[in-house]
Length: 402
Image (cartoon, rainbow, N blue to C red; front, side, top):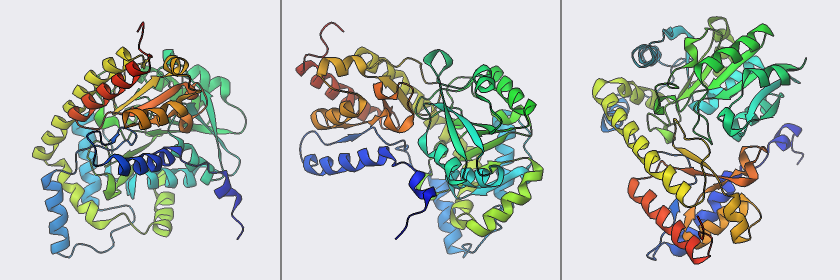
């Protein structure tokens, strides 16, 4: 059977390939005193709070399980609007908010609504691979623009201006970012958007980790800058509802009808049960739980990053949000006789029973030298992972002189 050119353009998601290998090895060591520790997948170890689970149960018991409007429950759109006001002091009317089947659906809808065949979208290198594949699925081209640690692995206005061509349609940013956990400074973001607007382009920004910001300097929504910005968000990360597949999209008012038509045809509506459950996310007691969990994520970061640095896995920029560490393993690769981060990740899996993600997925700008750790695990598992890595590196003589 002939496979479409569109499908063949989509590269494998190597994170999942590594995950399959880690799961296979995990089965072999499951009953030993060193079971696999998974620091390769960005999924909170917390699940939805009891109030959210209870709301889902009530929805099922009450028969509130039929289709909703394609744009989502009006009550949920209003709750999200209120959260922007109370958390970020930004006025985002509910009629600009579209509830979606996860942030993935939000990105797909935004790309299908705004990108034409042949359009180019500038995105930072490194960045989350699936985001650029949504551009490709809409018959556009994601153009990776190399970034550096001094730029916080984010685009700058100067780089956007320099990379812009007659085919450029806009930018796709992420703040905080996966894999680096770094955000764009609000002043730089403003300059980027000014460059984009001056060229008649679009600014799309992935803000799914915004609720997990740890630094007041960066913990601001891009929506405060302009109503022309398109923001993608999710209930997966801050709200700990990964498998519920619920997200949202904020777009200019004149874009909503196009998004609604696409959503009606492609998705019908987001999960009704998940929407009713998500209403409970914004209750004061539930928000208090989320803030306690955010503090725990910060504590994990504050332990894990210095511990990695002490092992020679240097993190060049302290993450200000999310739950990732983007670490340079090139020195250790040299000492271990390994080619790159791909080999390092598999060696760590085999010898330390710690699963991590090599940089291959995330672009080309130095990614062969870097691995991504997820710090979404418990503090106990993070301590154990560091100790196992330390013991492995000592046994190989790779920590001498560090």
